[in-house]
Image 1 (cartoon, chains in turn blue, green):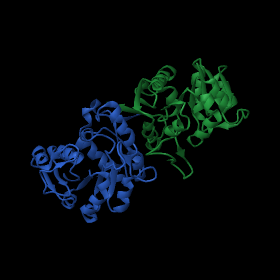
Image 2 (cartoon, rainbow over the protein chains, first blue to last red):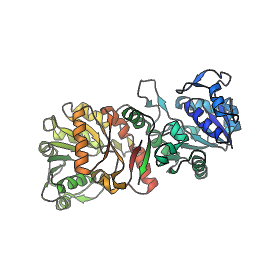
Image 3 (cartoon, rainbow over the protein chains, first blue to last red):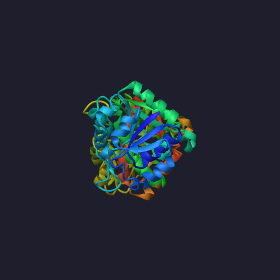
Image 4 (spheres, rainbow over the protein chains, first blue to last red):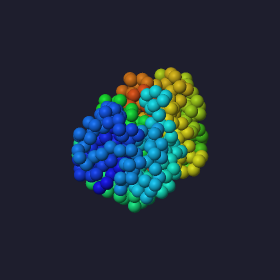
Length: 225
Length: 225
């Protein structure tokens, strides 16, 4: 499948590699696609190193080219830059497509741990859907570490939960299928419309504190019922 | 043990009954202790009915009497009324005691689902600790349904998680012991100081949406690691 990924940080690089190695045609979109030797994201890997890891089915390009390429597009940009990155990708390139929105509106400007720049009565997922009404936004994967996002079975055999939020039921069903087929997710809960992205994004503050308390980001929530 | 519970709604009534039936001396504090036939909380049970259920080890009294009675005190009041209820209980009656703060700052004034009246860069747990500096506040139990709070083993044999947040390490250790001994909690995660109550309280929005999505409030989060 042709997949466009917006964002060349740790999340974009990791999911891009998982997808490319899984046989998909991946274009990773970034602001500066020519700066292949620049370190990207918290992982600190350059895009040249990433291309070596992800193999021949992976390319690096602009946000616009990545969006145009993808039959489905992943927003793996930093939350503070997501709307600008999507504008750079272009509404025309995104029109009618399923957009898996993985971003979180984390604001590091007031120190650590970050707060949310949007929350409670709004969410980044909603702002993206409002700014791009012809895009089929599905908020998902934002509630766990990127290595678990891309390979949930490495933790408790995959016995934990991921959420989807969105206004388009068919897009959510497609998204759930991608989560299962691409990554191996088993327990996928449809929270409801895109306003439920508020709750999913508001998991981040406890997530960040759990990272400190547990001393590892390799954990996830399971909704036991 | 002598336990004071502030709040006569569903949470106070249920935990009070569990504790009284477990052999503890429980005083349930309420604004209007004489109105025994008034329906209380979402459960709709009157305090006369509650007294019948909870048995001879349970009494109903004022907030002040409940706080004075308790060696440990539970704040099971509605989040919007918690600070006023604690003021009515009185700083003197609470001084030096462990206060298990179960409340959530849910604001129903803007419709359903409720938003949080405090969040992101503050929490109700912190406001209570700041208003009562001589009280050993431990935020806990606010992230699940009261029936699971009081009997976690009824869901997956108790294989799910509860959090504690607070500034006083000894108070948190005591609280964890109470959770284990009173109710049977097995997986108790210390998130850190009282500022981590932000994350615990910010679980409520996704909790409320999960209640809708799952059609039942009988679920809880497990931190899989």
